[in-house]
Image 1: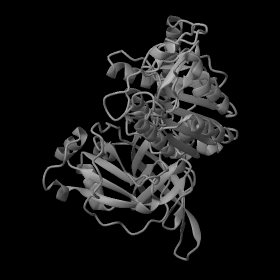
Image 2: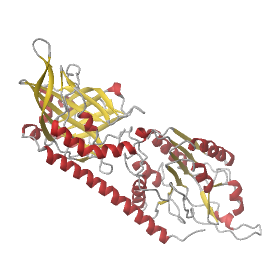
Image 3: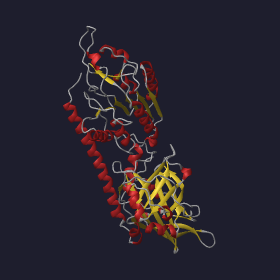
Image 4: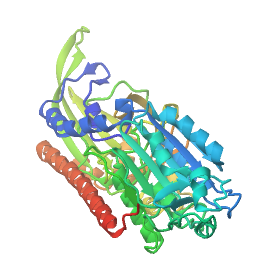
Length: 542
């Protein structure tokens, strides 16, 4: 599940500390809940997990052509796209390579039954594609295409592909990296059959998709795509960079792919997205996948009630052997929020009584700049009950992590934090100076998984003296490590200074979310404008 701002409602859910239970934190809780309710509701409505969406995909890579030169990248491209879709938790992902005509048709027939009950159906194809008289065809590896008329018998009409996807209810998406130089064009154009002259286009021709249908071309109609000099084509390289971005509308995603390909090909190749959708945003990245680490600072999350009973404090340990975090560690803000609470405890006779409690939480969260989803949140929670203080350190991450592996937090001093931010290896012997703790997951909600521990004075001192920390988890789908950096700049000041005004904080965070929403809407408008402009520039190929 994407971990959005509403996860801090989970911070405010019923929790226990030793023998007492708090009541809702009054104005602080209500202000925060109101400020985030709209965001949480929107995320739940858009989330595939929340709505139990069924998503299926067919991925085909054709490279080993019998009657044309072999294409080196389509099989690699298809494998990489298939893996990405599996990480996105598609229910069925079928990856096939080097299909002949009959195998291609059988694959489409099988996929049609899967699409029949799906909300989202995706077909990705890499290989050769041709346009004949305004009709587009995908080329199986055994096609000869010695004349133009043979395309209708030996190749797969794109219209057949869209028909196969048509039962899908919410989105039918066809991604075609098939606009490569047509090796059959010369002999098809020189058709000596004596029949009517056929129009053989460069690349694929323009298409008008149906309702709730998008067709992405690696290169605009009438132009050709580069197969690339590396292991993957420029189009797929850009697609893989953005397809797993959480909460990113599919139209904006292809806009980013377009910009990336234009840049790497020196504006020689322009991907294009054909078709329109309604006003609802549709993202391919499901909420259960930890998003790419591209966070931005926010005013920070909301306060939380006391944690549930936790195991004895974990001893400090050397950092786990996990790859370093990405080079651009975020500069998130830390803030302290305080309130009063009523806690339930026991008197000397063992009877339950209400006790007054003071609560403060020094916290920070990292927010994805495009979706507004929270990537990671950390807080030091302090409770005062009858003059006694307890401290707890809590981290919340998106679902999709391996719970049994727990969560590790490593604190870095200034000199090593600078190396972390630059993506450089640590100095020799530096690991001995790092402070790491392992937190066990205490609770998993639809909004995220919470790991916590009782914060020892030693660990709190490490936080106040450190320059940054890295939260390490393990992705449950493939057991790969995930590292998320968080700056500690401002933590000490927030901890010792007077608390932030709750109302101003809530208003600031609401405004941040509105800015992200406006930016997303603007990106959609710009993308539509670019599509309309390119449509006017392209001849209407019929």
